[in-house]
Length: 276
Image 1 (spheres, one colour):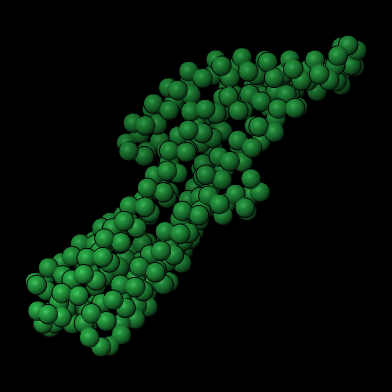
Image 2 (image 1 turned 135 degrees about the horizontal axis):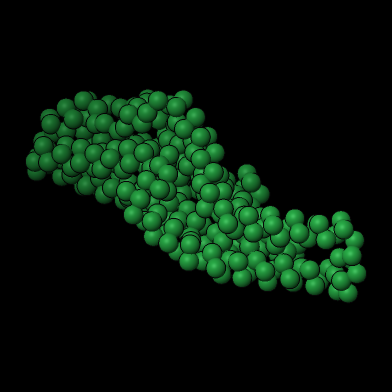
């Protein structure tokens, strides 16, 4: 059994993890317009523009339903303050639909400012990178042929688990971007519900949900900071090579599970905080 292959297998797994961690860190503060060169954003803008007409139709429908429901005999509209109330509501709702994309980008910029502020306290993701300690590499190099068989099994399983966690982590972050795009594309429809008193709860839920998705980036960055605190103090036990590698991999994978768990639960954390 080739000990160099065992070390190389671990190094490749750690390289995959570190690569996805760096990508995650960069994506946490990336705007939807610049993600993947803005190609997807251009498509979403086209869909958004196409749905504006439907949004205006829903705007009139929801406003009419609210008006008929609250002023069945139209006597209330004879009062100037009542007519002004409905006029202001209609104009405000139409403005929300007209400038829906601008409003969404403004909310994202505010949330992104929070993310950048948190990320600035860490200074970078390099301190959270995983490396193979020299003690472990030396122990692997000095192991005999028979002892390398269980060591090979331990490292292959550990490397596979680390690789899977790497892709689960980055897929969760990509999923956040896909949700941002869906909110942006469909925004005219839920924002049109502000035209009616009985339907405005849909628009409020939409805005809160979108803000929640934007703020998930803050939870992701905080999770990276917590993870960096775990990996900054790795412990290497003494004993046989298999025991040393197993203990180190178990601790490393546990720390990775903490990070992946926090990232995957970022939407739940934000929803609990915002009461969505």
